[in-house]
Figure 1 (cartoon, rainbow, N blue to C red):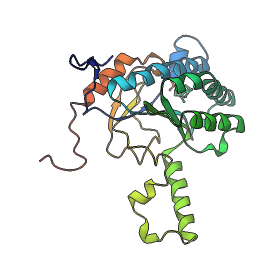
Figure 2: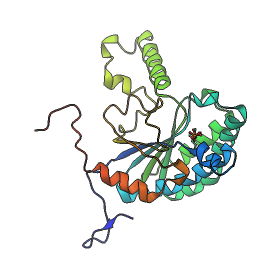
Figure 3: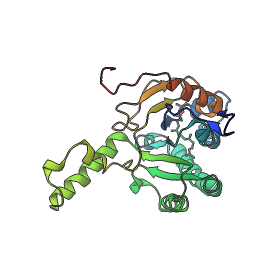
Length: 248
Ligand code: FPP
């Protein structure tokens, strides 16, 4: 829980903290293997962790949380694991939709939906629609997402607009390109956390994280807690972000 302001009796949230936190939820497989269980057991345990972290966001002043659920490279896993993950995404949406709605969470999905099955895509559409009026926390789930793929799709759409004569090549700058990204309605992440000890960004939010701070932690995702999240978010406030400039 955040610190309570004695005068207003409301949670005191540091306004210099990160507004948008993105998480690479890694380590489910190892967590399961350490317990002698199949990898999918770890993914199920990982899915259960999401609720606690979403719920911790308002107390920490985090308005936007973006989580990496399935990458454009994850199709290379065994057919059984991919199928199990797809079943898990469907079940997650079906079981969590009502609760997410009631807790004021606005859910969005980023990534290319073209390779996802129709049933999953319609559940994703329904959840986005159901929660479209919410504003307490903005949860974005990256599903069949890859940063390079996203920028490529954006460039393709931009080229199409030029071909149709609706834009000129002279209009192409960073701001215009960003409008064609899946994340066009979101602010850039301030902080990217990756669990499980790997110090890689694995094609996650490449464009958007140009100035993000990174935090790589050893904890495996199914062991990640609200307390650790709060510690990392709190430590962010002490960092000196200059966005390439020299401090005045
Ligand atoms: C990486 O761990 C994790 C994934 C590829 C899937 C992430 C999915 C979840 C956390 C659960 C489901 C999410 C939703 C939104 C319902 P890994 O398998 O690469 O772990 P390893 O590196 O230990 O093998």
